[in-house]
Length: 143
Image: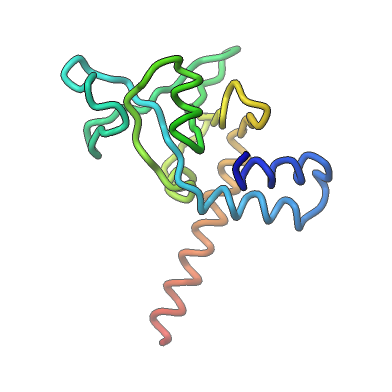
């Protein structure tokens, strides 16, 4: 069980508690995720070694919504895919900054700690990251 799993358990027990929400989303934004990619024939032997710029993230459709598949460990990606797959590692804050609506996220599919993220939730995370970046930039320009 990962720290993110533990934080999700706390969040699920008390969804209205701002402290459990803050703890989960802070951990999410600071976790590096494995994002499965569409693999070209030339890159099939490069499981989780696809370099930046060559990867197309795997997006799956379910009930008319499109989901970016994300996992917090390589083992979970492999278990879900039932084989080694190409993937890239992306920090949560970068996922938040680069995802566009109406994309959803599917975290840790096929585990007890799976969590879907809806576009409004992703937009909120993006806003949080933008506010943190602006505050950090302001501090660095003042110091």
